[in-house]
Length: 305
Length: 305
Image (cartoon, rainbow over the protein chains, first blue to last red):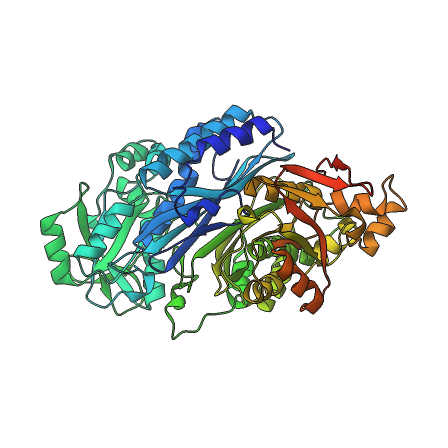
């Protein structure tokens, strides 16, 4: 049972919806009501202590922010516009309620930034570790919805930002590419896409599988982050290996026709770089091509849940 | 990390959507897409071992069924039609994967019955107890949406079924009143409503609070369940006290104009009884009236989360 003081704080802290709208049903009813202009896009992620975060390594604010951020990245993967979220929080016997407040503050900092409302959920205490489960609801935009399964042979593969070494700090600070995905979806002909959450090669192999195609990666073109460089100094891996296999980049992986890719990489419409890293091919699997034209298979590496 | 065998089983077990529809995006993308005819209605409940269930007292099938049933009851409270759900499951180190399968089977038995699709979620293992978090998405029907806040002075208060003693077994066997709520919403002028999850008097006091009104209860009219009778034989409470204060009835609590209530209680359109138990009054609080016309306040009792 959670102290009234926290629930009163939460009720005050959650922004009230415009009382002239039917959204006023929210928070006092058994379920939240929302009007969506397009199709509903729904995603859910559960983070738990000891698996997804350690209390000694991340602050409550960082954990709360990340719990929502990973969901926003999933909405970005579909080029959906965030609308609302429900939050379930399980506290351990020793969790201070200020921890719970800071966790919500982290979550709300991102919610405010993306115009998303927390419309429900609950907080409980139990005898085990901390769990935070967030379900985010978005709506499809005018540009349509991005999917993993619509890649076509000849598409170029591009990524936003740079990859690898996320555990150095990027994983709790990253900007979910929500606005970027919607903007690209509106201004370019994108065939397929997803977010890179489990490592470039693993996620690309999933996109290929969903599209029943393969991919040829241009290994010398992969944008390697400074964090991947730093990580490689203490690991047994090269910076490229970090960029190919580390999880939690939360960048966009997109495929689009070659002429559109050329226009996109020339225009560079985002504040972050967009880099072509390969192309979609008919033969299933991930491939790289040597200078002599010979093909080698790349084994997908990354974080398998 | 969860064994591939379970994930393969789950992939097979979850019904595939019609491949001719855009719902085909489901389960392979980062988020699920669904087209809703009306407004989106969203609710979420998290059940955890030791607080909401004990492994020695409930089977995996019962726990899975209940995790979805409580969400369906929340949709019923809004007279919403269930569409989809996402499920996050955390297993303990010792949980057999057959337990996880049985849990899903319990959940799917109810999903199938209500035409609801499991469109996403994840399964993880960690070092603590079992957690199951379900978020259900529904859509508003042609009859509109039910809310707690629209009760009016003079409304009669009615309940479906009978109340009390849910812990005797009703709490994991109950039928969420989804069809009942939609049918009543379409055929009668309902002003307000909710489901009774925390105890009649506590939930009625919340409905009154949301509507900024009060209620007079007719204590001799409360439909007392056989389980409440049975429970009272071993408790220090009367059957009526069980009916007024026990949680987890998951019946509907509705208010409607007196003439509509008379029509409803005469017609009895459901397979379960509908009983008038009081009326909405202007003075805030819960009241009962003695034979001499004098009013006494009733203290709301029930399960406070």
